[in-house]
Length: 381
Image (cartoon, rainbow, N blue to C red; front, top):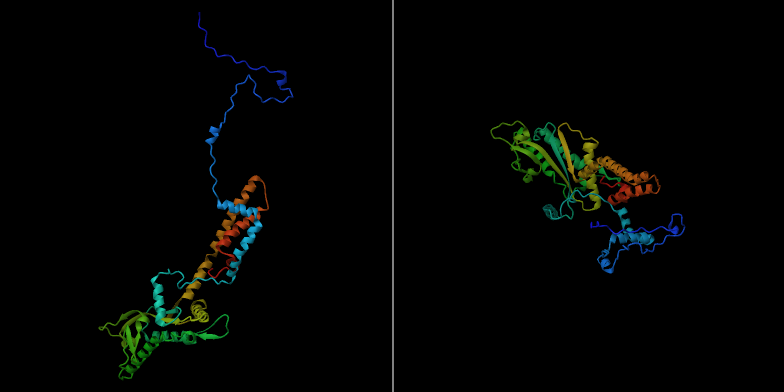
């Protein structure tokens, strides 16, 4: 007999009854019938035990946000005591300390400044205003005409140049505020008088004063030793093999002097004196450069000082204002685009997003600059 082929047992499909037809309004039963194979999963406790939930971690940022969202008025009340001390910033005068504000605390210069204060027996560091004088033709300042002009300039700024503070009506000179450094530039005048005495003696064919020894770096006039190395720079001594015709060169050992430095030193013993010294220094700068009132055919004058440097830094900061404004405009454009672009894509314009743009710009600006900066625009700029 032929072997019968392997045949799978036929599964008879259940017959649809009239009650199961699509036209029937009876709700279908979800109870499995004996004709169907039960393929339901048995999610036993052993399977569920393998699924463990991750432990929750405390998120302080999320917790703080929930606290602010649930209790906004309480948050405002708690912020008021924290904000009240900031009112004192309106009476705070902020300015850069150019003298030692950028110097590390362990810098050797701080120790040197302390030794200098102890040497001069002062409680504050002196304010220095330096005048540098050169010949306009870049020639020799030992020419008698040029040397006389240098002395006249020194006398003018010491005795005749008058300054007035903004909050005061009275005028003052450097001679009124120079204590205790009024005689710092006296050696220049003494040297010039010694030169003139020696030249006069030569013209009159009389015996020169033996107490006058006009030598560099230490000179002696009327028996008083004066340090010329603090006044004269770019000095060349005379060559004994040469013959010199300049009278001032003949009576000294110097052939050439390229620069003469005068120091106008002041002691800021109190805030008013410090304001006077700073105003005098700035007035000298304005007189020489801004107002261009100084005119001399022989001498070119340069001035250096801390107050001048401070004002020049302020001017440089003002030159950066256009770049600051341009950056602020670019940031505003980016913030506005980032906030309004989704609304444009969804065609849902909301007026509430416009204040959000200003808030997004104001918060970082206030954090960086502060309300007082926006009100007074700070001295640095």
